[in-house]
Image (cartoon, rainbow, N blue to C red):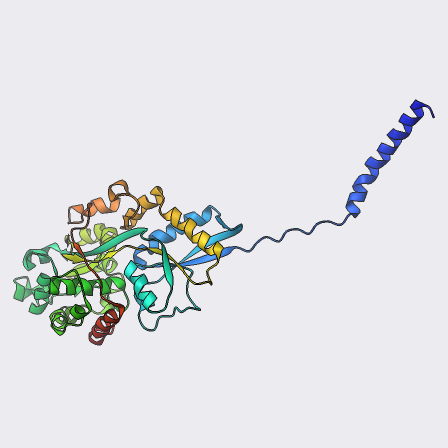
Length: 375
């Protein structure tokens, strides 16, 4: 066979192969399409003091389409005060609980552990706040100094402002703090009172069970406005209704800072830090049982790292919180600066840190309070 004939047949064969190959490929069995992995959703229960900031950061974090162990993932945020978790009757249990928890303080995790809820901190603090006295300035001019528990307790004993030298139209003395059976800031208020009464930072079981302390504090509790009047967010209520709600209150610094401009526009207010105080250091924790998967831990660690980034920490101050990873001076100080003239401090809080009592004594203290003020 001549060379030209061989070349001719090769060309014909190649042409036929080109025509037939696509059809042959169509007849081959196709590989199954990979099924996408379902989205991983991890719930974090967040205390109300940090909720607005954390919820905003979760939205930003989720917009970046995070993945955990190869799965698309999302953080969901719910609002839960730790006081409802570690007290008797909690809806959480070993079989029913969020994977992540950002409570108000490390002592909350300790109390929860005593109640059988096993959480371990993966970040000891993402932000913080503490308690601050706020008092309308005209009342402060009458009540005298120092602006601390002893002065305010003595005012409550007098019952009305006329007896203190104030105007008769001011009526009864109205102190305020959150109910401790519902709110950890309210429980903190009881501890600051106990530390002041006993002149010690070690709020022992004996201190909070002391009948003398309870008798000393009772006039303040009796003088507090109703829950309906105060509302769950007392500073927000003061911003809308002013001195008709309360003359002075012991609340988280974060609430005062975020509401200061509105409150002060209505009526001038001044701030003072308790001599003995509670720091709500806001750890981020994960359920430590075998039920928590590797992917869930990975996602929580990613979100923790995101919360600790400098830009995210800077934003915490715009929600009234003190950042954990950077100095407050490097944060967004728009809210804090406005309240400095009224007594809010930009440097460290000028108070002695309280050592909290055991959970059993905490329950006894709150039980005593509830018997006086059930709601």
